[in-house]
Length: 267
Image (cartoon, rainbow, N blue to C red; front, side, top):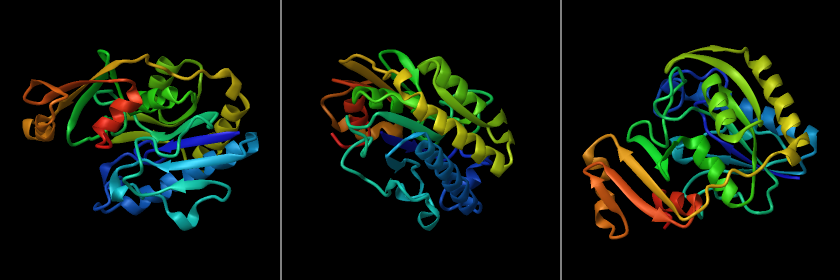
């Protein structure tokens, strides 16, 4: 079985502050260790469950998409590091049978939720597809769904785990912390969190046949609302988008994956 592992950082065990998720901040190295530990636990669990191929995508935006501590990465997986790749969700294809979302966070506006945001905590107010507001989890799941790949595991705080169950149904979740505010959580001890992730990753692989791809049938309409007007300036040069107001852009695409390629600058 081939598993695609999408990873972020804010949902990693022990992370509660942006000081741990931005490369120029004092505690970023702690964040890297936390993320790498959670990824390694997910790899061990997936392998124990029967995964034979694992591709790990370092999807956190800091440090040019290179946040794991490579020398500490678990064996038996291939790692997609750095950016840009050849497209959005680079490394995921129709040959993948299952996807994980490791160290994910809740969508912008969720509360209480650790470091809630969607795509950019500095720029984006929200993103909607066909009128439904989606966070990074929903967008990742929909892009995987366009390739026929179901998401079977989500790890992070209680808010993103609840978001996953509401959106994707009876998938496996590994709740490693309970959010008290955007920058506060009750966190499991590292060893306990990694043991939970490992057990849940194994369960997800063993239950892979139960999960269905999350598909939003195209064509789709994507709407992006930015925090400030200048953040939407680049869109004004495009003739294939509609500016609904000075900071909100809307456009059509064949699928969510195609829309995310447009958003990310690949199309």
